[in-house]
Image 1 (spheres, helix red, strand yellow):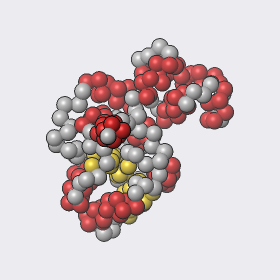
Image 2 (tube, one colour):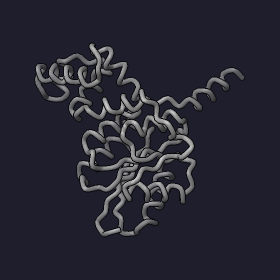
Image 3 (cartoon, rainbow, N blue to C red):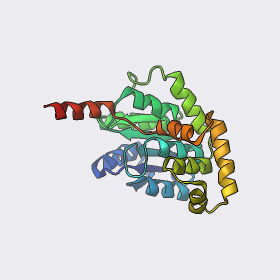
Length: 225
């Protein structure tokens, strides 16, 4: 690897962030590793380092809002591959990560060797997902991923505000644009998502949220004991 490469590591768990950085440093000590602990920091780092070769992104850290953070980063900086890391090992979640544009998925149960191999594969232009979990991404997930990927960064911002129940006037204020521009964005969002109303758009956006089925089952079992 050549000197000057930058990789951004975004994870709010210090110990795992260190493990990720160690795996990257073992590939080449000259790689510059930028560590961040929440989505806002990660996005700011990406703005400062648009030549970064990779972002390693914790799915569950503050500010991510499920897959919304991934979708936004892919729309804003499509040239930078993203590896998702998470304690969630649910097949559907991993398949969704692939459909929303992730180049890899590293379960937090992975060994240091497995982490290193996954990062190395993505840096070489390949993808890296758990072999026994990624087979057969459902057509519906692929279609949703394509539709979300067609949105511009500004349209994703508007869609995020729609999910929060904000009115056009409020969105215009937040984004410092006119209400007419907001209306134009909403119309474009509806068309790209293939829906007819703001409510339907919010329902589609809700599919970006992540449900950890195994964790939900564990909670249900705990309440029954």
